[in-house]
Amino acid sequence: MTPVESGSHRVITAKMSPTPSTPYLNPVDDGGELPGFRSPPNNIEAEQALLGAILINNDAANAVTGFLEPEHFFEPIHGRIFEAALKLIDRGQFANPTTIKPFFENDEAMAEIGGAGYLDRLAASTVTIINAEDYGRLIHDVATRRHLISIGEDMVNTAYGAELDDTATIQIEAAEQRLYNLGEKGKYEGGFQRVNAAFALAIESAEAALKRDSHLTGVTTGLVDLDKVLGGMHRSDLIILAGRPSMGKTALATNIAFNAVRAYEPPKEVDGKTVTSEGAVVAFFSLEMSSEQLASRILSEATEIPSEKLRRGQFSQDAFLHLSKVAQTLEDVPLYIDDTPAITIAALRARARRLKRQHNLGMIVVDYLQLIRASNSRRYDNRVVEVSEITQGLKALAKELDVPVLALSQLSRAVEQREDKRPQLADLRESGAIEQDADVVMFIYREEYYHERIRPPESATEYDEWASKMEEIRGIAEVIIGKHRHGPTGNVRLLFNGEITKFADLAHQNYISDSPL
Image (cartoon, rainbow, N blue to C red; front, side):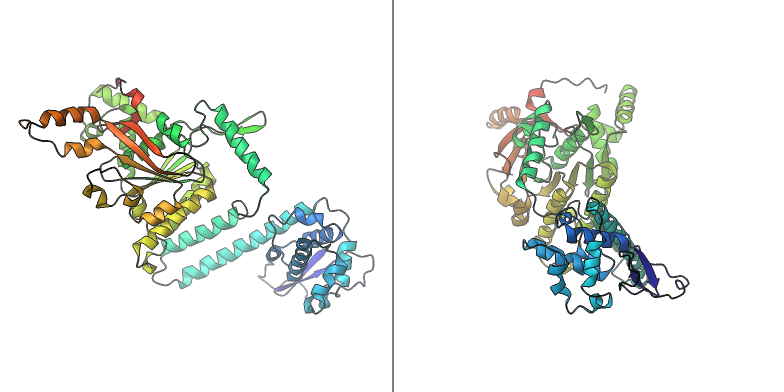
């Protein structure tokens, strides 16, 4: 079968029958292609071979229905034949030239190529159905290349005729979005799957947890007690970490991200199975702090040199050498920081997808949710609706990339008006949207912070009672799990060292630092 080009429209001929006079798509001899004309990528022979295979054995359709659509066919009549065959198969009927014929009785395009006789020749010319999937892949590949050409043409036309509000950055993001969607189409698409496939994935996840020393199914937080409650941060989950200012949200998120990248090991094959570590490659979107400030916090945690001393250069030469060595050991950790302020949810998604494609991204941290802008914030008069789009976008991204997304969130001032200042779900800003979309909602609470602010004079009679209470709660932080789709809610107590902005398990509170200061 060979395609013949005619002007800007392709006409097909075929060698499917020993009779040369058999009518088909009538060849047109135009003396060659027009100067400068390039035919869009196509593979007519693969289209004919696949359709013929389906018409003689409908099982061939099962090999391609997961990824091939009628619009992928270059020749429109082939796409309609494919669609008609699928309709019959879905009804439980057999799709062959006889049963498909009624769909095309008044079809002019079919009449031009010989009517129903063309269907007979498609079936008669097929030798085997073994390569049906290969034919489908070829058709899909050339359709993808035609789509690439279309995207390129649209990019050029948009760049030439852009409106004032349509900035170059917005155009780049839109082009990236279309390219990513094209490249990943089918990979993250939904659709039904048999429950046995889901069982296999669940068993595989449980087996991986069994083989890990920590018995985690998700990405580790690096905090034993928190991991016990959460089971790690599960893939496809949106996890909200909320708290009032100065509670340590960014510190805890940074600790978790750093612990995850330190625990990361590239996947490896063991006994024919892919084994993954409890760590992850992490993307940290820092909308509030610069990458330098974030790196300084990580170095402070790793070296146990107070971040205040790092900023002021108040440390010894030995401490500086220690700092340099630690920095060198951390150079290769797979932590990627994006400190773009007021990033849009569309840009965040595009950059996360790129990192997933290039570096096998395993976890996303966003600091913090309320600083993200909706893709088109001008159309929103209601901030709650805008936040709803953002949280839905983050949840969709978590499912699409199959990674946990840890997003920080501010709490309303209502907390400060209560005697008991432990946060609740209702304290979340724009709480309806956030609470609804999140799989896990955690609050960070340090009673020490509030108790410090009611310190009485030392001469006061209540000072001893205050001091005793302060000694009891000093350095103690609570992670309050207010929502947990995969397990129980409750409180996890942690140790917090404000000087180095580090959270640790309470069991480690007797640990003595050996860092040279």
